[in-house]
Image (cartoon, rainbow, N blue to C red; front, side, top):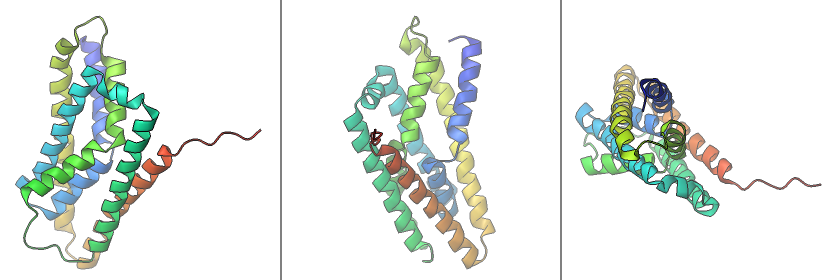
Length: 209
């Protein structure tokens, strides 16, 4: 990968990982309710998903998934249902005081991993990265030596920033009412993402002649 191509990839990836989505919302939520070290397990889960998708993209698996209309349709519906479920549950629990006992580390990690894996933005982003920036005449794993470290560093910085933002929001929410509406706003984001994902999964109706 040339320096010019790498620079373009960096710009693309910065936009990709800083555009708010389900992962960002989850990191903000973790930052608001957990200690920093435990909240960072959510970032670790996103990095796990990133490594998995980078490898799968290199192997062509994600392209294969996207090429299967039925499989991709089912996966997107499952993802939509999961996001809506999270949003409804978080909305219902918004008025409930956050328990003093924090969630187990395993739960924080697996929850964040589930949100990251079902995120359709991830599939689209990794497919775009490999279709636009990988050079067909250069061995793929040689290029991965540049792409993967770059992507992982930028991903870490971005979602760590979202986690810190959540911590600052949590500290600012001194009044219970304000805290409730912040939590409901984050819950609504999950619901909106789920509805949009579900709507985009619906087959397009044929135009009636």
